[in-house]
Length: 440
Image: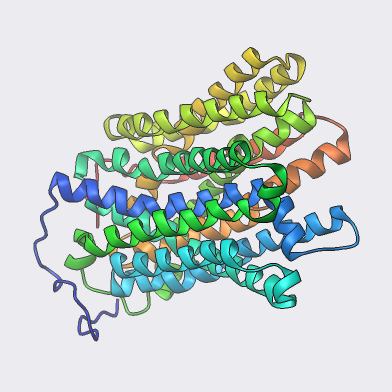
């Protein structure tokens, strides 16, 4: 492995330095790293919620449907940029340090989110307005490509050896925090403002607030937290992408295979659920919001519980149970919701789905980080995670809608979920147990 340690402006300790992580430093690392994940998913919820307003201001068309489709496609541009961000920022995180990469990520995410909120509409800026929104989504997607690998490495490397599962699980819990925060922000604007005011400029406020509050605080916290022990105490691989592909290709494949079920459940269990409940099952929007919010809260609470359980029982047993639950339990629960579309039954079903998802994914961030050596950890996680998310997760809502339209079967999205769960199950069985093995 080629290494060098004489990088210009390198503020990290030399390889071999003994770095002690205190509980306070570890907690600060969790918060600092999680804020980027929160900002990413917060923006995701806002864009989805305010898509009609964004379409009206930036992508006007002859028909409202065409305008909305263009706005939705623009959101998808961010997924296309994720693999490039994974390649560039993942490698940068391994060469320059997790902290350096995460600082750039939070800056880019904040700029992208602020641009969406501050860019004047086409009636003022013309085609430049649409171009800036596309650029904002590309920038956000590029940053997202480096966020997960860098943040996961940062958190797990700061964690005590016997609590890596618990600490890593906050990556999943922060996703739920972001969904609740985004829904609360959008709902508050809708409640406080008239429809005309919201459509005119009110929708912009949550984007600007997120960029300023989450982004600025996240940058300050990341700026003032120490880099991870592994990042400062190990030699640097000058070609982490090449090393990852040549020497760890099998493990990368296993990581990507597991991520298929992981990302499909993220998008269809949590993000697509309100749409499914209203459009497919006919539940009133207010009731769907209640059910979805309780599901997200259940997932948020359970993820750390599952992460902690995996520290005691091992990653593979817990993740195997989770994959089997998703594989075998999704269809019956969706069928139950379809035949009993009443709020109480729906809440019970979606909360059980949250248990399945937490069991599958709560230990996954720690497992990801433990699969790879420190010199290529950020690169490897970024590559294995983001390519699978782009292909299978980003298009999951589209696939679910297409399946329902093609088959006229409200249960058809469960086929896609089951396929993802099977991929995750195979990946877990092919992997080694990592819970009680020191980080390399």
